[in-house]
View 1 (spheres, rainbow, N blue to C red):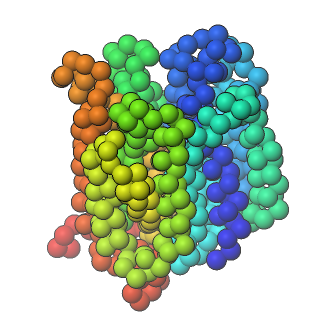
View 2 (view 1 turned 90 degrees about the vertical axis):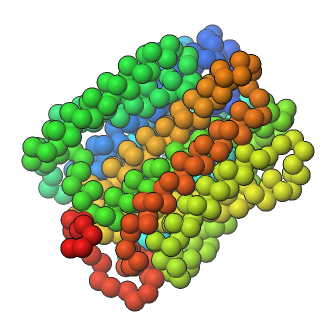
Length: 473
C-alpha cells in the first residue's frame, strides 16, 4: 500500500479534528480578550458544526465537478483563511463568522479527503489505508484539550489558530506533489432545492441539539430548531423521490452492507461522541483533577488508537467484517460502561489500561465501518456515498453530546443538587447501552460481507451496488 496518500490526508484531517476541540480549553481566555462571556462564546463552537452540516452534502458534487484533488487543496486554503480570521477576531460576531468560514473548509476536507483515498486505493487495501485515516478523528479530540491548555498558558490563544497556517501550507504542497490527479467529471446541475432542504435539516438538528445540551440559549429554541430540521428532512425525502439527480443519493440505502455500516456506525458514534464530553468533566468535577491532569489521563486512548492501526488489516482479514464489528461494538460499549465504575480510589494504572483498550477497540471499529461503507459501492457512486456517511457522522456525534448533556441535566434535576460522580456513572451506562445496540445492525450482515475489501476467506470480484434482498429471496 502506498502510505503517503493516507498520511497526507490524515495530517490535514488531524488539523481539523484537533482544532474543533482545542479551543474548548481556551474559551475563557478568548472570551476575556474579545470582551464576551465563555457561555456566549460557545456559539462559535456551534457555528462550526452548523457550517459542517450545511456544506458536507455538496462535497461529493463539488469533487466531481471540479476534481477531488483541487477541492481538497481549496478546502485546506479556506480552513487556513478561517484560522487567520479567528486569530485576528476582536468581537463575538467576528469570531463566530470566522469559525463558520473554518467550517466550510472542514466540510470539504474530511469527506473529499476520504473520497480521494477511496478512489486511489484498491479495495483489497482499503482497510489498511482507512486505519491511517481513522487516527485523526480519534486522536484529535483527545489531544486537543491538553494542547489547547498548554498553548493558552505558555503562549497566547491566537497560536491555536495561527499554527494551522504552516501545517495547512505544507498540506497543500504535499497534496500537490503526491496526490493523484483527478479530472473533473460530467456532472448534473446542482440540486439546489435539495441543498437548501438538506442544509436546513442537518444544521437545524445539529444546532438544536447543541443548544439543548449546552443551554446558553433557552432550551425551547433548541427544540424548535430540531423540529424545523426534522420537518426539512422529511421534505427532503419527498423531494429526493421525485428529483432526477438528488443531492444525497438515498437509494444507496437499498444495499444491506452500506445501510448497516452507516446506521450501525451512527449508533455507535452516539456513545463515542459522548465520551470526550463526559470523561474530562468526570475527572475534573467528580475526581477534582485539573484540566491538564484530566487531559493526560484521556490521552492514553489516543495511544491505543494509533497503535491499533498496525494490526487492524490483519484482524479483518482473519475474522471478516461481520464478526469483528459485532464483537468490537460490544467490547467497546463494555469499555464505556466500565468508565461508569471509575472512582477517585480506582488505581490510575487500571484506568489507563482500560482507556488504552478502549482506544484500541474504537480505532479498529471505526476503521472497519468506514471501509465497509465502500465495500459494495461502485466506483462511480463513491462521491454519492461519501457525503451521506459524513452527514450521519456529524449528526450522531452531536446527538451523543446532546444525549450525555441531557442525562446529566435529568440526573441532577432528580436529586436536586450539583453534579455528582454518580451522575456521570449513570450517563456512561446509558450511552454504553446505546452503543451496544449498534451490534444488531451488523448481525444482519452476510458472513462474507465486504470480503473483497477485508481479504477474509476466498476473495471474490468486488460487487456493484445491488438492492438488498429480504430473507428468503
